[in-house]
Amino acid sequence: MKKKFAEIGDASGNKDVVFDIAPDLADAFADAIRNAVGVRLPHHARTFEDLTATLAQTSRVIQHLEAFRELVIAAADRTSPHADRKAIAIAAGFPPSRLYRVLEKHGRPKDRRAEVLPDIGRVEQHLANIRASATDASLTPEQREKLEQTIPKIEAQIAELRAHTAANRDE
Image 1: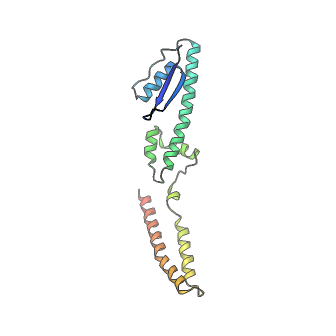
Image 2: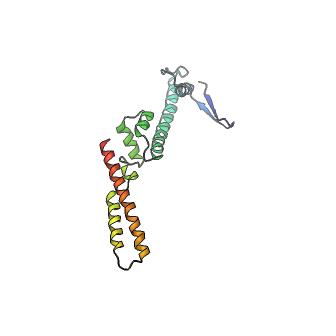
């Protein structure tokens, strides 16, 4: 069985060449990249040894591409706390349950709301601490004024967090 090689290049003229590709695997890979319909039986490999060599090389490629796909899934999810997981699952050809298993395997949280929104309780506690500090008699008028200007900003943040949380519950 005569082996094939592949040459992959870019617009800058850089080329990467891979040798010793099983010809049936090369054909199947080219069909997959071209999105050709239908998978053909191997027609270059005829003997048991040639078929098992083609199978072994195909299996190594599949294992490598599956690992690569998982890394791409995790990278796509890391692009934003609002990354569209439904689109990621569709692109990967995964049902949601499998997508979440892969994301969990790569350290991605199932619930990303904690990444996006700070804990309202912590923000409210921070506000309570600022209010208590503002009543301290040892503060200068400038310090007290600065704290009093901060209070409405934090109250607005809390209101925004509550509205966002309520909107997420309604979705």
